[in-house]
Image (cartoon, rainbow, N blue to C red):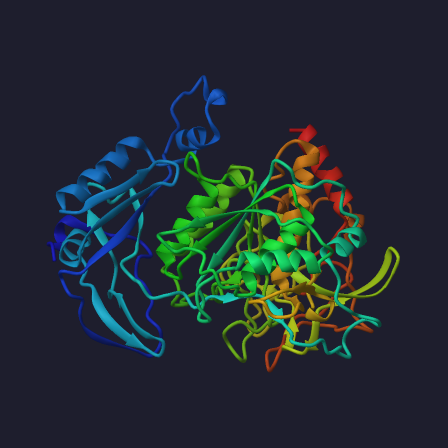
Length: 542
């Protein structure tokens, strides 16, 4: 390793190890790897009289991206260290480099080792990552040194045969996205001209993917709907597996059913933090020729947001949240499922919230159960029931990582169960999620079966936002500030008794239902036309 005297550690670059791990040996020095350096946002933007004439990406790079001189300095450092520069991108604030473990160890003043834990072997390091003093002020994170996969969960529940639960409204049965759109008063439209970005990734169940035949059969089962225009996007070489995993198909078909005129861009990512960051960069800062989403939908949980969780280093947490903030700047709406096991995420005793739903820069989507539909009337309960796939409940709670954001300052939020800590409340909105009132899906050629989960809510509202963007003629972008400022009639408040009164799950005590905001359904389910009108008024005033 290089002398530490010429180096400075990067704040938050220590990568936590799982509780039970063993260091095996130094990583083979001849092994090659790819690493991403993430730079700070430029301190001051240059005068740009023609900024309005620039493409959005170029304008973002000028005002919010990496300083070109600092980008060049980092590239020069990498070259001098014997690393090849794969890509340098000012908008993404990143320099991607490739080289041997020996060169990487020396360049970043680390010792990469092989470790063992209950899920297998991985490569990582102990202590902080460092960079030379000459660029230490520029580099905020180095991603890719650790290749341990994030133990992500996709949020969807499928049943082989429906079994009605006692905690559902009367006459609960599978519905279609079109029925929900009618019940939620969605505006007319097909989302033409919009692109919905769907984030899909590898989990412990395997890689993400779908079979086109399953998509076509599902659209037929949902009412002989047209197959949406789908564009597959490989991230770091990860492609559509070609086999339906349930999650991917649900995202595509629900969004496509609501916005059949939109382009559905499906991003396939691996489970390493570097893969995940690259996927978000592609969705939020697309290059020329790549899809350009105006809406992003994420139906995965990357673990609880508790401090010290081993999935990400603190610097990676910061960079991911900054990417979601970038989405706001680029007028991209980000919708994220809140989870399918109530207040239980990883701990079997302590209430937790799932990330990225808890990030203040995304709109978290919780779950309800809809039944007793009679024309345009219906009953809507908090989702906490049992279907043939087992128990399920809307995720929600109080973040352990993020403070109460300004948009929730006027809301009475509970304290975190078990700790009494204040924090960002999850979810923001909710929608139909129970598998008992879920949407038919064809998975790997099997007969159509109802599928639910908060995974169905994020793409549902992604489809709504595609319609709204089309109708209003401009992208809505970040939603939370407006959601918490509009009239209460914009939402259908989801009450408790006679339905479930909390999102407790297993042995984990959850959060109670409230007549206003609560940690089960947030503000409630959305009246689509009221939201469109509020967004139109906001756009007219900007």
